[in-house]
Length: 137
Image 1 (cartoon, helix red, strand yellow):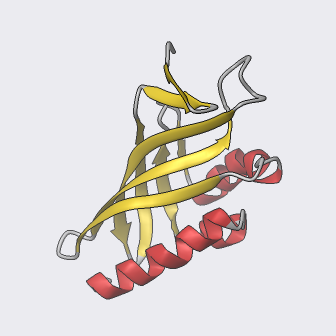
Image 2 (cartoon, rainbow, N blue to C red):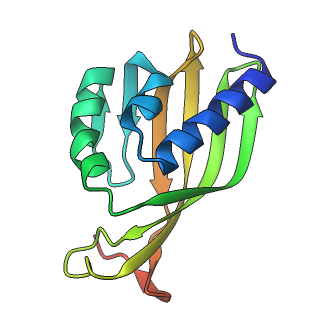
């Protein structure tokens, strides 16, 4: 089991890896049996499958950046929740030339010192070039 401080420290290193677009660094904190569920409902099981799914996004990242807004750590149950904002080129069809700001949260479950489950949720509105837009899909 990780202590609260170890969870916080691992999360801080993980955040740096995300913002440096370091796929190996991001993958380092995942358990081999990771289950990931995206904000759009898609899911991936297994560390190598997740790496394969994310490799194109990291290779063509468009300089995305996550900002951590708030974290909650449950040392006893080895869980963590963090609220974030993602700034990147838009993912929305027909809006790819615009800057997107998306807010959401991740629920992380740890086992053996690694993230074994990552559930991602996103608000149903985003900002495109500073204008608030409601998602339709």
